[in-house]
Image 1 (tube, helix red, strand yellow):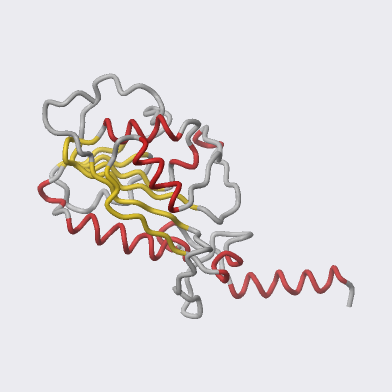
Image 2 (cartoon, one colour):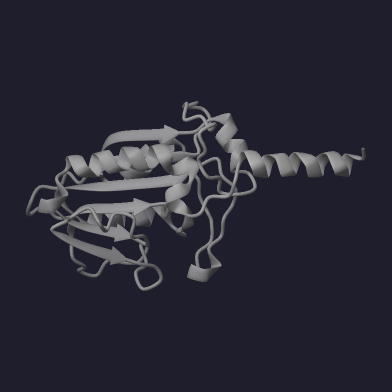
Length: 211
């Protein structure tokens, strides 16, 4: 059999072993991320809090006291906030890799957050480049766990926790597609091979302090 034939068989086997996900909720690489973020948000008591989610709506149904979506391009996370409302919880998942200036974006996440409020971020790491031309967004950045912590602390946020998840099988399974989780897919974590990195942080500003 030719090399091309062997390559074709391997790709066919990969498609069987790593089937395409139906959507973000079905992504193997997001399963542990979703579990960690969900548990953290529920621990805050959503029914008493006003939340804003940046360019996404995954957490709209958590029973917030008030919920706002801030979607690109109408809302630019890197632009001056110009007196925008502030929130008890600001959620920014799978966005920071797509912004032109992540340092300005991190400062604005703090600026959108009430004193004592919470910021949740997540970004992919060991995944292929994925531009979003339909939203006018490129793919610019990757952050290790240490890099995510440094980014948020540089914006003046107090980082409560940084997490990550990935393993070599999941890296392979997401090389050519966003793979769906199947029973044979391991959720073991190899810290040196993260596909997802996330952080939970707090805005330490006291009421009345200048930002």
